[in-house]
Length: 589
Image (cartoon, rainbow, N blue to C red; front, side):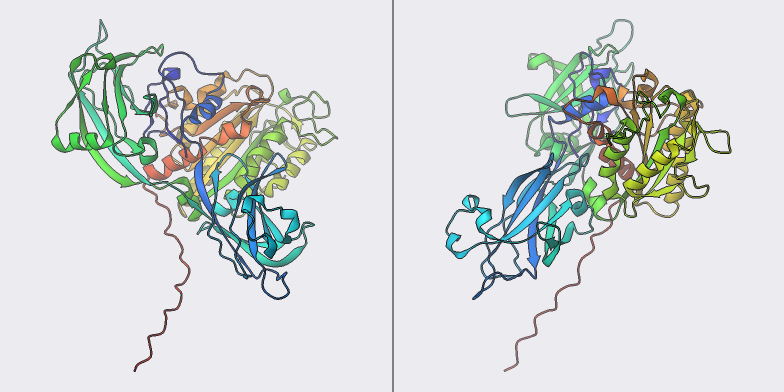
């Protein structure tokens, strides 16, 4: 789901891209400072490669109404996306003559984006005979007989086992009509080939005075205009002129083809971000494969290739493999199970007062908590089969009890689940009037509860991945316990999304998000297996080009894939329909 970039803008020492992290990370040339929020930076900088998956849509219909007296209908399908309430046409099929069971050849192209809801509308028309010689784009649809329409979201198609969805046709008023339309989605130009490589260097130049260099490699793809587009970097090896780095993985989407030019640069790490170039060389995947087979080394060159250096690059591993995509997993029955935890501490303000972050506006305008719940749940609901979501509150005094830091929003003592997005919204509103806002702000209990559910699920299968949304207005008071619970949860199929609402100081939240280049460490010294936290302060993205939801969800497919790939969990085999009957043998003479 998108390209992997070097993450040097924060002075990070961790490997980024190349299979070391999620789908995207911040692009940077190793100098300067990032924007106000790393997640927002990632979203914009990730556009330089690709944050979406191109899909090809195919169409067929069955049992259409016959609108012609002396023959059958001549159907054509038009597909639209809905943007801000407006329909935008993205394609028309050819006209198929005399058919109530059309199987159209013309496809429609669309870019699938996980982090947004993408509504689609399909309309079928019977094209009048007198217009058959009119170019499709010139056809006036109002002059054709309307056979019906159907609606769905793109995510409803890609989550099906075979990427196909059949919809009943309706008229413009929503009443059922005769006939169905079937839509099939297929990834295009998306080779799943990838290359695992492990590098080491010998005799690197020393750039430090009182110690040895701290080298790392950055791999970039060279565009046609010779612009270097970073696609991954290794971790930093401290005080070493003969470093051996952990393996990296480059996908064919990153390197394009085995003969396209790549730039491999070796830098001496500097915490200021002003990394000093040790040497660079231009190569290709094919040349790197030859280098591995020959067991020889390739010399680095100084800036712009002016001088050949003694330092050499070697490959200890070069292995091509098939790497499954996010949609491969989702369409084979893997689920994203959504969970939500809401901050009910007193710092939010009295819910009856308009200044409160929990104020329910009689006009229906959602408050910040409602916006975050609606935005994230409306995207994730399509990836959760039963649409039953665990929902908790924390930081409030519950009826006939004391302050609780993890209580069920539905007021049930045994079951924390609510049904659908509407269930979350209803339970949230009811809770506001049944609890007393209190404090302090503790994340540990709700993270531990979510981790418990994820851990329990692993015992019964590996096709569920959990996503916990925490919405809060303030500073956590159990920072170390929160770190410990996150580090423990990093081994589980779980990601944590945190939205900060209001104007509090969210510095501690940024520490929880490993986008800063250093993974969390627990009180016992254990380091998180992977980055599972994404934090976004709502105030920094409101009114901008990117929404809170896009910033939050943009890294989720990468976190999902990292978990599955590191555990060698593969998508389920596709379910094939029963084979058509064989033709009878020719009659014997």
